[in-house]
Image 1 (cartoon, rainbow, N blue to C red):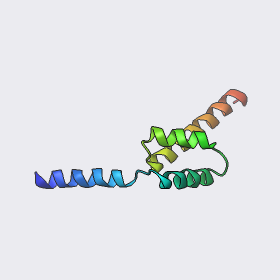
Image 2 (cartoon, rainbow, N blue to C red; image 1 turned 120 degrees about the horizontal axis):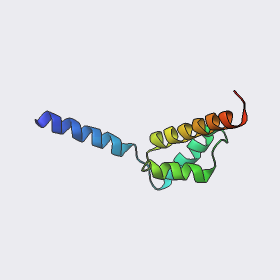
Image 3 (cartoon, rainbow, N blue to C red; image 1 turned 135 degrees about the horizontal axis):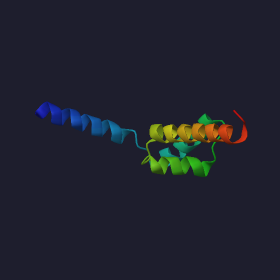
Image 4 (cartoon, one colour; image 1 turned 45 degrees about the horizontal axis):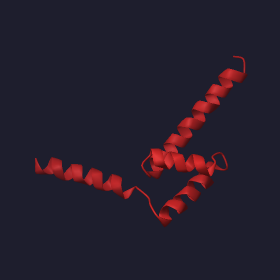
Length: 81
């Protein structure tokens, strides 16, 4: 039982180490903006980080997911199939 608890602590510790705050948060916002190549606005990146509880990996997943959904929706809406 101790091993299960220990591995749970490792998972929580690893998740907590992925979170950003303070000066690192601004650097992370800029890195995500650069990664998007101008696709996302700063406010959109900040909202994605908030929704992801300041986890940059999850925020990027959100941004790409929403971008692909919008692209697919626009394709269906504006381009006859």
